[in-house]
Length: 66
Image (cartoon, rainbow, N blue to C red):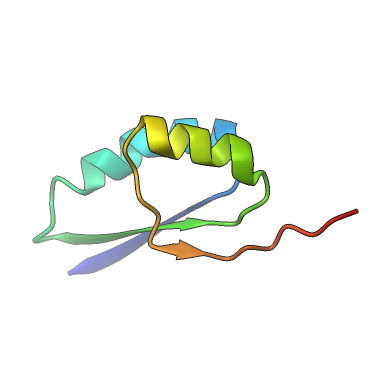
């Protein structure tokens, strides 16, 4: 089995990755798909993930104030 990790942190990146992630999830016997968010633009990113009903597997939470 192959492992694939999709890493994204902004709304435009998520919009591009969601269809790819959904397609990969159709093949659980061949691919283990992991979604990882960086936390760069948390509020806007969460809107897209909620709308698309996507749950991330890991969160790097790298956002810093200032």
